[in-house]
Image (cartoon, rainbow over all chains, first blue to last red; front, side, top):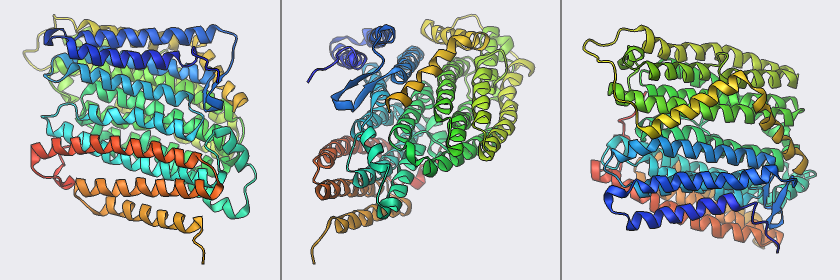
Length: 494
Length: 101
């Protein structure tokens, strides 16, 4: 069998980096352990090189292992996203983990393993490969969520995440097993052709299988009503891990969901379309309403990320209830996903630095932060307004693409989803703007000194990259539209 | 009466149901964990029965992967339970209520 080594080069590079970190952690003396972070950063950067080579090459679709593992433009864009998000999370972890007394080497090892899992998900076109990818993504995160072993809150976060994560795996697998049972295939394109014309007796089983797969993935992306683990886990986990959970792991769950329903189950859109519609509407509404009454900044971002997951689903869900323009809907959803990842990572970097500056995660404790540390205050405003969708920041373009696709889908159900999204965008503005208001307009506590020491270099770099990306994409959205185009390939190849 | 694949699937569905109900009713983390194992094994039974009925090896291959992942998850889960137990000397999930809102 001929193997296209370039196609799996990113995964190989990350896997080698994982082994390198493991070996380095064994031999490095304690004060030099931070080199494991450097190794992780170098590895993630090197893994981007084959992605660029593949994007530049004329080969559109690389299919490996008899079609179980496909690297097309869709996979390339998402692999790029996962690598960059992993890169930013490693950068924001450096100072955070170093100041802890826990093991640095293991931390990066687990984080890189999770990145590797999401790379696999982006290419998986087979139930078994997809399952391995999903588990490789979430498995290390159970441990990372409980990273501060001596802290009961971190333990609780980890245990809740673990039990619901494994429960969702079991539900997902049960759905997959039934899909296999009715179609007799594990590869997505074969499942699709097998399900195109099922016997009437198998119809209820197909419906049940799709329902279970949908519920399993809904847990992974913490969509309402399967979201209840997320706020607790987000609050108790170390903040860089929370950033990773709310961006990469959520994005990986979405990608797995999209690939499954779009490539394998596209002809049964009548079953999963309404399901996605309900998940999108509920996630937006419940997430936003719950975010309104949060006083802790991390919990606020937790509910905000639930609501954002709802926004993200809107274009694809609208297209699938309308039953047409699925490719356009998916493209809009992927654009939203990429922009959300950048601005949300920025928001979490602000939270890390803000919590260090003020010593609290309470929003009210951040009063006057803009005067104490103006640069951090500006960045907080940039990321939170971008999440709210205010022009000229990247978030507005994401919202614009979302509404355009939802309205273009055309049916009454699609339009009503767009209306629900519009109402929710207004609600969301309130709590995002409140953070900016507290930071800039509330009086700083008496005796607060203007900050003199700069943030750690690695954290400053994270903030810088995310801020530049957020502003540039907002001002020149055209640079970004090309990513959306990439998803169309999935339609052609599926 | 011959035992067809449908019987195995029904048994698997029952096992899955027992596990699912157990997770929601039991409050001990270890028992919840056992319930999840029950569900994963119900999935395995479904895969094997379906693969056998169709005459296809892929279902049995899937079981190997599920088994390995389940074993890895046992390790992680027990480690987390031990970490909680060291703090609280209890494995009841009801006593874990530091995080809410």
